[in-house]
Length: 265
Image 1 (tube, one colour):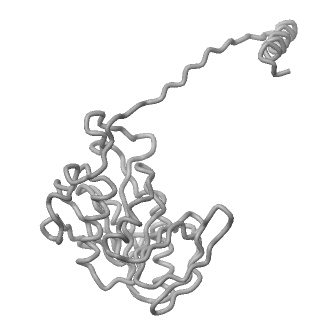
Image 2 (image 1 turned 135 degrees about the horizontal axis):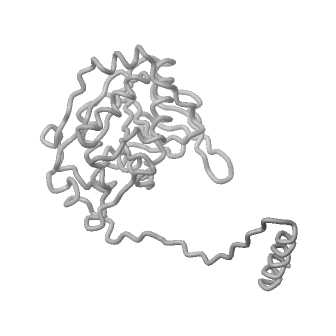
Image 3 (image 1 turned 90 degrees about the vertical axis):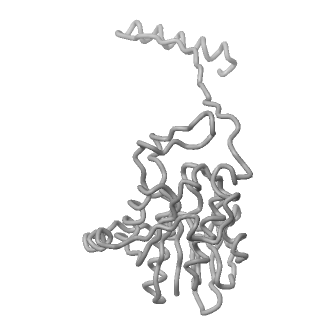
């Protein structure tokens, strides 16, 4: 069984910055990590490989520094990795990203499952997994919390819905997007880190894939951010210092009067 896991390198949550002119995220000079929700996809892929045999191939589309995320995935237990990197990909929306990732997956070929995280913490759309399935014309099952069984031509999965779970029989090859309930991600091992450091990870550019140049990057993206608004929270508050018992009583009286004035008592 060959399982392909697309992952994304994202900025640390407290380091997210946006370019107000282009509406794209500023990634230069920002500490980056594997998208936390992709770790669950990596974990279940490794477990399935260990149970059924085969290999796990992890891929990522991003700048050259995204190779760090791929090496971390190798250190966790993935077998091989490919970086998809080209300046022409810069500013891609979820449609253009899915298009390029699908092109890379076509080049890899021979896959049984493509497992994605539920969503990326920077974009928060959950669209790339289904987008890959659309370009590859594969069945897709999203929000998977459990993989029940895997056969030669199908797998049985539990899909998280508002009322509980749906049990689905999905024909293979297929795309799954998984939620946190699927598994607890493991930590990289020392042996895995040694393997990751030594591994030669190829980089594929647009010319290495069967993709159309006018469908790449910001110019090839049918959607884009046209305006960025930073919400501001304005609160007018009154502070009462209560340094002794008498002041505490006065503060309580003021609080009671305030609540009564707001019809809250």
